[in-house]
Amino acid sequence: MAKLDEEEQGGKKSQYLGNHTITTESGHMIELDNTPGDRRIHIYHASGTYMEIKDNGVRITNVEGNEQQFFNKGLEQVVTGKFDIIINGDARMLVTGNMKQEVDGDYELVVRGDLRMKAGGKNIVEVGGDQRVQINGKTSHRTSGDRETITGGSNTESVGQDNNQTIGGENTQIVASHNATLTGGEHQVVAAGGMGLGAGLDVGIASGASTTVKANGGSITVSGSTTASVEAGTKVENKVGNTGIQITSGKVRVTKIAHIGTADLNSDAASGPSPSTKFQ
Image (tube, rainbow, N blue to C red; front, side, top):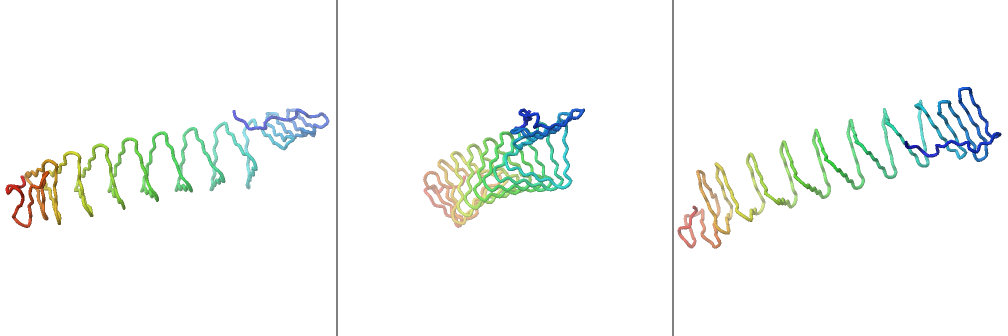
């Protein structure tokens, strides 16, 4: 059991003529010791509870049972030196009014078990410098209402394994500058409804293998105010099923390694090395 220092009782140097004692029949005792170098005041209860003031001004209080203190007006404690409180059992502090703690230096809280904090109202945390949170186990964050996160500088997130996001409503993302998405494996984008892709400048789609654009039950439209080009290192296949591929405006050039031909939508003329060049 942990104890504070200075708990040893004095009286080892007491002189008979300098020590005045009062002892009762039940075992109570009061000592007023005037021995030089060992001046003491000692009040001893028969139950073992005592209070002693030693020669150097140190006061020791030992309570064998419970202790109750009532201050009907106020209590102010000023400790100039070190202040230690050791509780070998449970502790509870109830404040019916407001409570404020101020620490001019560092503040360290060590909890070797669980830590639970509950606020019936708002919880406001302001950090003047950096903040770091280390969690060695799982973490869970749940917000019943709205959530807003504002970062004035850069934001970096690193996920060592899988990352899953489920959004019950709409999702809007606005990037003021460049936006890049890199995927080491497969990358899929699926929309249950319509899907649009737009850009203020050029749009490039490239792959290291085959590229397939397929419309089930609809049409594929390629249009441009100037020129729309389809190029491949081996061959380009235009297959028309029950619907078809519609070219709405501009010029369309289909190339192999060398130029094959050009179809001008504004006229019926076709140019190229072979008059039989056509869409298959």
